[in-house]
Image 1 (cartoon, helix red, strand yellow):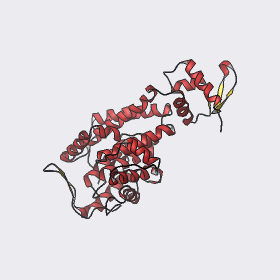
Image 2 (cartoon, rainbow, N blue to C red):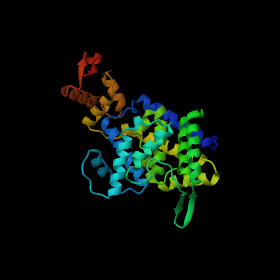
Image 3 (cartoon, helix red, strand yellow):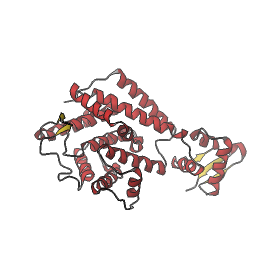
Length: 318
């Protein structure tokens, strides 16, 4: 059965905004960030998603673990980060429409942290806030059937992927299929669903915006529970995604030094380009700065110069 929700004017407005911004991302080649930016965003994603679950490690400590350095911190927190790194570094091996792939990802994510990693829960669970039961999950006997239905929805329902990813995230949280790790799996799987159509989501850390105001996240889940449909959560998540893409588009407003600009531009893999092409990516730099950057790139033998004056072109060196 298709999960219940309504298409509201706010949802339509956000889908339009996100679609326009994804077009701008693709046009600016920001869907292929530099290796440095890619690494920074991955660290932000892991840090934020685990911070929501109470992990205390900092971005600096996660960076150290990513670089295989020793970190002093709670053993459980370190294990959580190492597991998340292992999962996020091999996202291309996950199939978002495959339930077996979902269970394998949970096994990796929760390995050594809970006894039944990679397996659906065998007991009843509820989410308690203070002395109040906030959410009573469906009986454990129903979990395999509910998750099968949810994956059938992913495979067969023909609807906008932005909505579908939010519906899956909410419904999975509602089912609460695991004893632990449900939140991080919901956010991971929404990323994977979106990546199928929009590769930029592999490097878009929308979890940072969630962790900055976790109460909004939990309220959206709770309000959807009370209404019996995921509409409120869809609106919330689309707003988060819209803001995350806006942040990415504001990349060109950030201050980069010469080395950073050259590294970023090279990652765009433009084989042949002009100074005008270079300045189209870095809109706030002057002609003189662009010329100095390109001269430095020639000195470093990153590319070669072809032609003179207004016919000057640059070609990447293999």
